[in-house]
Image 1 (cartoon, rainbow, N blue to C red):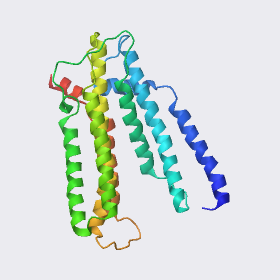
Image 2 (image 1 turned 30 degrees about the vertical axis):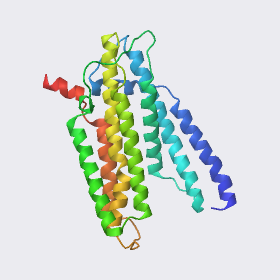
Image 3 (image 1 turned 90 degrees about the vertical axis):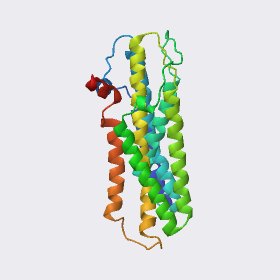
Image 4 (image 1 turned 120 degrees about the vertical axis):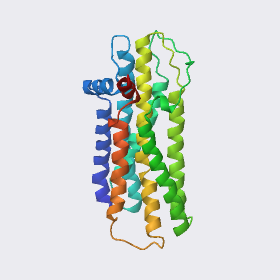
Length: 272
C-alpha cells in the first residue's frame, strides 16, 4: 500500500476503532438481562439484580471492546505485507480476549455489603455446562487431534504446523485457566437470591467458554485439513467448499453453544 493510501486509511481505521470503543461503553440493554433470566432460569430482584447487571455490563463492555480492537490490530498487522485487510478471525479473537478478561474481572466483583466464602459443596464443569455442550466440544477436540496427526504424517512437522499447534495450546490453556477460576470463585453469599444469581453467572460464563473453544479451534482444524489434503503444497486458487464448511460449522456450533443452547439450570427445572 502506497503512502497516500495509508494517509487516508489509517485515520479511518483509528476512527472505526474509536467508534467501536465508544459503542462498547454504552449501557446494558434490558433485552440482555431478560435473555439471561430466561436462559439461566433465575429471577432478578432488588437484592441480586445489581450483582447480575454489574457482571453482564462487564461482559458486554469487554466483548465489544475486543470486537472493536481485534480487527484494528489485524488490519495493522496486514500492513507488513503492503496491503490493508480486515480479518473476521481477528475480530472474533478480539471478542474472545475480551470475554476472557471479563470473566477475570467478574471474579473480583464483590457486591457492597455482601460476604463471600468458599463453597463446601463439590463443584465441577458438569455442575454448570450440559453434557451435550461438552460432547460437542469433545467431538471438535477429537477432530482437531486426528487432523493434527494426519497432517503431520502427510506434510511433516512444518513451521506452520507448529504455529497452529502453539496457537491451540495457548487458546485452550487460557480457556482452561479461566474456567477453573470461575468454578473456584467464592460464592458463599449470605443472601440466597444473590447466591443463586452468582451460580447462574457461573454457568453462563463457563458455557460461553466452551462455545468459544469450539469456534476458536477452527483455524488449526482448517490448517491441518489443508495440509493433509495438500501435503506437497500444491497451489490452489481458492479454498475448497469443504474448507468453508469447516469454518461455518465451527463458528455456528460455537455460537449455538455459547448463545443459544439450553443451560444446566433449565434442564434441572425440566427434570423436576
